[in-house]
Image (cartoon, rainbow, N blue to C red; front, side, top):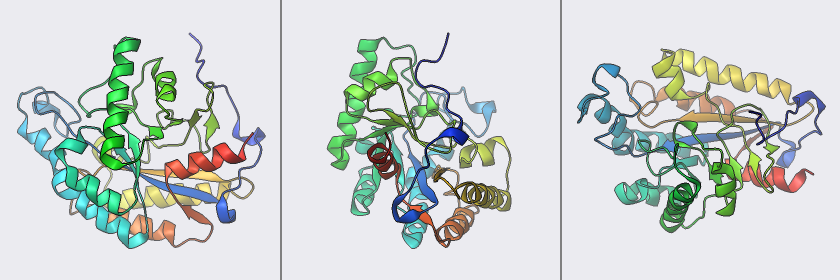
Length: 286
């Protein structure tokens, strides 16, 4: 089966991208603000208990995010002038309204990230998924005051009909396809792919790859330095994916703090959101 969602486009053959203010790198933080069901296995630190119901070990680890971790990261973002692009489970609106309120005060960008991170739409019929996605998007709009323009699937999952169904709802870009350093057009009218990172992702680096804090910091700065060098002739996008229950931990928080200080201290960096990247690219590209 051929992939019909997008065409192959080598980065060396494209028209140059120019970011606002002649910036070389458009940088955004993808902040995963999520809710997990207590009676369903999900992202786990220790697989030995992951199938148990309840699973205090793993559920408690995940629940640290909305209770503590997100507030610690919030202070870091404020310090460096970062407005994160929030990858928001719609269930957060009813469970953790204080986070929504704090983000609205800071003019955060809000993207749809499914209902919760324990429920995937995989296997749904088109009608079932349309109703599911409509509920997610409408709930986020009602809670934040902004209809989400972007989508990241829980665990970066989609069905073959997801992009078209999201387009019906006014969503005009996806983060799920992590295959580029620049935005590009999908084969759905008005729909873009905007870069996100699976590898420069605290959940993958710390829990899957066993990185230490200094190794995380080195990876982030190495990523930035390479993209900055690559962007001499055409702008690049750098996404840093963070989860409050991972980098919001006390012994790790200093490392995203230092990473953001490093990036924000460079000239030619557009500290922005994925919404603004999509809007600028859509308006300036053919």
